[in-house]
Image (cartoon, helix red, strand yellow):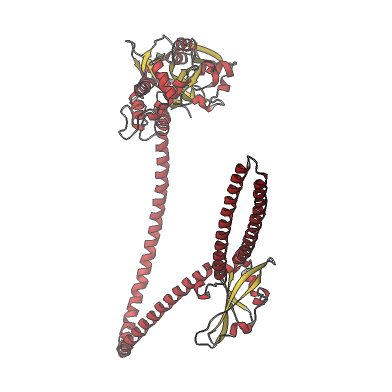
Length: 588
């Protein structure tokens, strides 16, 4: 479908793109949102750079509205100008505008490091030798603009051998020269000149971004232009505009990016709405919408006609049915008289039923009460069962044959048996020491006490597990049942073995210390006698050292006595506690 730059279709297209930019990327507004943080979090390196370069020089494209342009009195205006002024103010920088006659001169100045910034540049790798880019602030594809008599689905490949106007030094110029040498490039100084080439037939097409082309189209009053296609490239970043920074100033790129990120949605929106013409706002109802609405209306008209025909047929059916009902009504009046007679007879029966209603109601209330009690009992039983299943102790409910009737949840997790495995087993397969008589030893007592013993359970994998078993029998539903509770004592047994080994080692160490003291004192005594018999001048020093060694041995003796006291305390304490068993009732 053809898109005319001077028609409502182009305006709809442009505003759709700009709306996505404004709401998706969010570059708008002059006054900051009061809740938005406008402070720049600058690092020392950036602050040092600003101190050394308080003035940054920008060379704007003089004819690139709505993004940037120079007025007749040298004023710098446009979207890029407003964005840069806000960022410069927040960063503490001053903008110095370096005017040029055309974009080509701006490129030459930044190549020669005479300026620092280009206000609006399409991001590409074609200028990487001398230019870096900030984060993008606008996104739009490069459009192929032709006369409205050209096809509407053109690509750059279709323009091979054709003449295409591009602005000197623009990214579109470099792209055609680099990637499409078969296209005859017509270089112009600015966008209006390129559009004029197409209008007057000097060029077959113009390649540029939609916003700038639409701006100049409306301003110049061109009525025979359309968008005939999109210039697609492998690198999608070619659709994004950013600030171009000379490649030897990476710190300035970082500062400007931080400034862009401080712009609130309200600020960005206001800047774009200031420079985008109000005439580009899409109509409330486009032709496509009208066509779609007409189709919907036609569809509903068909449905309404269908409903009307259906309603008429229903009305005729209702009239016929009414006639039948009138005849039936006369017949029913006769029957009603007969029923009245029967009603008198039924009244007596009703009185009898009423008499019994109260009794039935009372029975119903009693039934509801019993049902509520059953619910409470069921809730209590569920809580008890949940508590049992969460217990670490394993519980088995057995009948008089040793058959397993039910188990707690820990049996599955500890022993590894599934519910299906246990259906085919009795308890002797798990506890070889179990006997029915053990569970019945305390049956019939007024206060039964469980039978306890230690045994080894056999897990599903064949491993043995040391447990302490408690057995007790009880009567349930005229049947004697046995409750077997088992607790894993493997760790406790291991600790008891470790304590025995520890006490043995302590006894051995104390005995070795006692022998060691004797072995030290005997040589000391001989050394003392030898020193006295020698009578040399070193006798005093030798005696002094012997005395010091003797004092150390005394300390060892005292430590040995203390160790024996500690050993006796530990032995008395641990031998006492090792025989203590926790009552089975406390584990339930």
